[in-house]
Image (cartoon, rainbow, N blue to C red; front, side):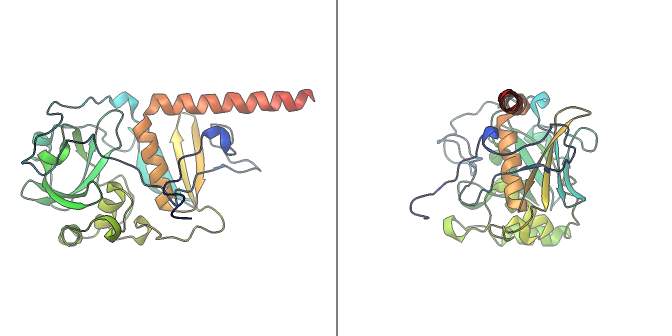
Length: 274
């Protein structure tokens, strides 16, 4: 099957069961999320951009970023919140790479963001450098090069997991430098950087068996009083869906959800008329 299916694309919201967008559990339960067994997201920029210096960059200018288009969400493992990105509990402010360097400490997680792109995560290892998964290879780059014109921020506190000590985080990252392609155990830059900091096997590809009930829930905050919930069998799948939403942006995600719920209401109306 691997030769015939290299990538499992995301199903549209119309193709999977769902519930009311307020996220309240009902007898039918929350919507079941997509399993990304054969998929890998692409958090890279267009060909020609580099992160190691020495080559000509395709875009030197700063990339666009609009904080209003951030998708705020939380992740639960059963009843425990293990991740949250929201203005209520985290500082979503972003900085230029040069300004962020004054705030970074070895072992920090750094996120690079730009509107319409997958977020890119890295581990700050000191001496103005980061280690990150880029173009199917673990690389050691200067933070300013890794940014590729994107804004950035420290995201240590988004995952509500106990971190390893800074020395071990840096060691985890540096020991992987040079790994590429089939040697990799992580599906994207966020999974790699998070594994370095927290050491959890759940961040690795195949770190959890996808059987039985879905223990993970992704809650997308639609408004102050409404949220939409999806269930997943693995943290790996949650991260893939969360990153897909980040790539689309809040406006597109809400538009997608609205289109789905209109379809559900139309289907209910048709069934009621029969």
